[in-house]
View 1 (tube, rainbow, N blue to C red):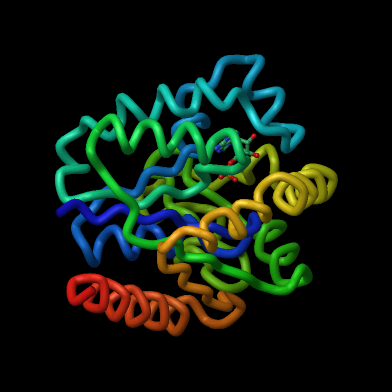
View 2: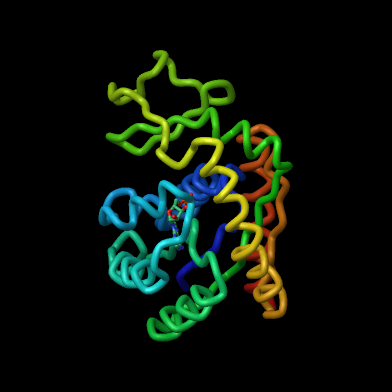
Length: 218
Ligand code: AMP
């Protein structure tokens, strides 16, 4: 059976980092809708992203519909950044149903707002290989450069005004989804992700493992 997870959490909570690590542990694909958009967005969509506003729900689900046909999704996938509002929950339900797939669990990350702000403002990414760094917590070996040799950049939406907008969108549109998923018989794995990356990764992995084991016996 395919392992399908949603990772949920405010911007800066470590969704990208921990999705990538979990994807590696289970040999599943890491599907970040933000990353898909950064590669394929139209000028109009880029303008919305720069302001921290959500782009069209249908556009995202169509990108996902195509992406999950890829062979790297054969064992499953982890959805990072989708769904982000109630309509997207419905669109995802339809997409999974039509492919006879079902969710294993939702991993919900949380961290205090000061941690989120400091993570986002110090974040740098590589435009070549999409690797993420942090100026203080996860600095590159060579100042300003990725291990692949490309110069690191700051995301257009990691400025203080857009960060505030993204946190507001998360509170208003995305947090309510936890209630929706809690009402289903679906495991919700809450993890405080304020600590050191490897410690948080270990906690997530252990909690996911026990959830998978339990679900096999129910
Ligand atoms: P992220 O990389 O997940 O922080 O996403 C960056 C930006 O991409 C968001 O602020 C939105 O503008 C857009 N985006 C990513 N995922 C979605 C989604 N599921 N629905 C709408 N917009 C999205």
